[in-house]
Image 1 (cartoon, rainbow, N blue to C red):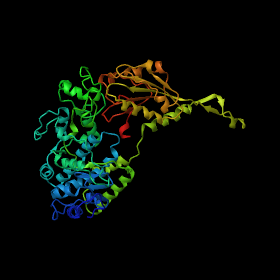
Image 2 (cartoon, one colour):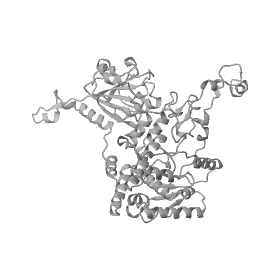
Image 3 (cartoon, rainbow, N blue to C red):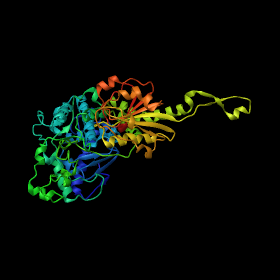
Image 4 (cartoon, one colour):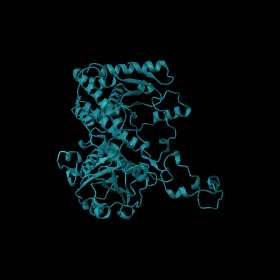
Length: 532
């Protein structure tokens, strides 16, 4: 195997050594599934070979390990040379499964770090399943050739309580600043030399790996990354001020307030050491991340490793699915093993998707045509020349009601994102947007004549308390008039008792979720805006 491209100045001997190692791996992968006489002796894998070999491979030192955007693969030659042969073979499968499941395309606007962890549980789980099919012990092989891993149950314990002592991970210390850095490495495909600071950061990352994410016994209902993401997302804390995810305030805040007179003199922009501002005017978040509320907290994402970097991609699901289907067909001809879930997964990803906009568009067209009702007070003029009286259809503006969740769990970005979706409605859509948290603010409702940016920006945001929406579905008609359909913009974090009290209003209800959380609506249709 020869690298298609070399990024940066890299020793040619190092490149040649890495190419030789990768060549041996590809030769083994290209053999029959039951051929245990070459390489590591576990047999070939034509499917992985078909996914990896024909595409572009790039050699770069911009990353500590490997990376993929679903179309190309990036490799650090130093890292390749350090790996056990079987470990590198497992990582090749890891990379291929990321591409096959189109994880880069499916992330959407989800939190990148948490999504990377969720998809790693999926791909490492598939690799472990393959080892089981070969009558091998995945736990032993992973620990010996890649290092220790944390199961989904163990990681959920860590998210619930970072101070919890987990067997085998006693060396993890919350608040360890060695896991945080301000230096950001360039993109794997950025062709330039690393700065001294970036080289130092790369060395730190190469030594940083303390565990990665895998589970040989993952539950059947957690076989999709979206499910794992939702499960983990609901366990994470969220900064009430800036919305930063996964930061735990484990330090004593009272100590932060104890500022010496010398530090006050240095920090105060006012220059008055007797004032009470305690330097907060010049406060700079630690490591440049978060706000003054969460910057000194412990970042849960600072530990662990995803084995590789997950990059964004500009490829479409349709083109990717066709390429992967070709790889499956090639693997069959080469007597490879095709997991039964693969074709189902490709089918799900390429199946036609109906968005909430399609539902609303159909509803609007039906409403404007009079819902099939004829208007006998008016007649079509052209047929009248032939002596025919053909009634016109009733035609009017479609009116909708919108409930905007303004509770404390909804950040400003969540509300802005949800409201921006209404701009997809055309100019003949009149609506009333009602803010709500623990109560429905009918008096602060905003009526819009057309769903454009200018009018939507006039929406009032009041509340910021809890959630109680049952009243909206019961009393909307007497407060905002009849509606063709209702839209609810929320993060899905509703009170269970409130959901029980909700009564079906008898018209279409469309729930637009601004965060990927598990939510079962009592009626209507739910659409995840992050995954649509």
